[in-house]
Length: 611
Image (cartoon, rainbow, N blue to C red; front, side, top):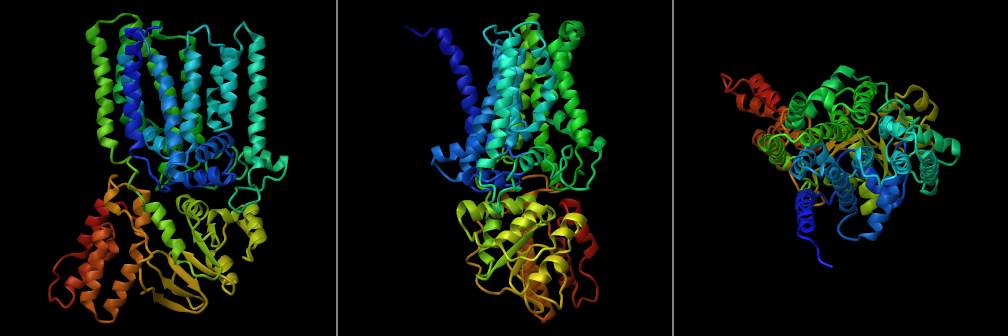
């Protein structure tokens, strides 16, 4: 049997296309834990813990199997590699959808692949790319004209399976309902739906097979009632994005969604609009396109209006991940329009213009975001967690931290790498969940007023956590605390050690234990925008700044200046250090050498303010 030249040509183009994308993605994967929920999810896959609501059972089981089958590199790299595989799967369905127009398909796939957010979360292991995979699969099946595909069976089945990964897939329910209501093959629709429901229920029930009693598992899934509450996200609020009393602006969220969409899909949107005008709206319009646009609009309007989080600081990272589903739906909607336009047999010159516009914009994105989405050498988060744990004394110690990135990175280093698993890591917001307080009290002797935590949701770290427990525990925290008479505070190379005694001192021992495999030079995001990596790196500056102030107060002005200049070299956004250097330069001068307010304002104008 001979393989035809046409078959070879049909194979070579997608092979080169997806090989190129895979190379770009894989060459930038990190072996160390990164930001957001990635630490929690990687740890859950490795240790079979329950992640935050709704639990993501499909993601956990798939990655749990993958990290055990593939023994190459670190656990984090393995779950990242699996993420790349699902990302390529999502892109493949886009390719299959547009395949008859191969050059157009290449342009659209490259545009999506190198868009900032899709690319970023193709490399950072989270549930959102697997969600994109299911959305892409559903939309491909829905638009497919292949009569061999039994849509009534497969679409409800894939839809139900996808919901065991992420609930936002529910916004594609209009296309599922449309398929089920078609006047044929009702039996197949019932079979696919029933089988899908059984899979949905079974996978969520399988959360009870995980290590639910562990302090590192979210919740206490010991009953069907608890499981039901976890699936419905009752810890957060079923229709809330975050579990807090925060409120975001729907208009701000919509503007951000629109801005992030236009930035990367400007050429795609432009050529689709031109194609619609050239072809005529009536010829483009179809029931399928309308229903996908309805799904797209519902998701954009409803979900982003209900997102109760103000867009400040790390909240941008939270919002970014939810934009991926919007972009997948948009790609299929715009792709359908261009596919219909190509079917009208336009001039080749016009088709080449569309294809070149898409490819050029994709390559511009590749160039622009290449370093931003390169995590291979970025060890800042894991180094930070490692250093905090290495600083912990041998006696019972609590690390009290304040963000998901820090909290989950510390747990990853403890449970996956195996460094100081005896240290109790407590996140500020986790204390307001009764199940967490109950587990802490079960596994440790830490005293927490559970009733006050559950009712007020406003525990004071010093009064409610620190002081009642100083007899048995030392504490490490990155919170900035005043000097107090009720406890002794040691400023460590990163963070503060709090223990019995009073006053303030600085750690002046060896820092050889510190792991600093990368530095801020690898952070290439806009300096005047918030960046979680810069925020974490900022924590290293307080020890050196305090030592400089101590040197200055003791009369060693030159030593103080040297330490501040060294600090500014590593943390150039430290305006407190710049202010003190300016004061030193003006020290004992009859006329100021420079205006210190101008120095500080220049730094604040250049960099996001982390202090």
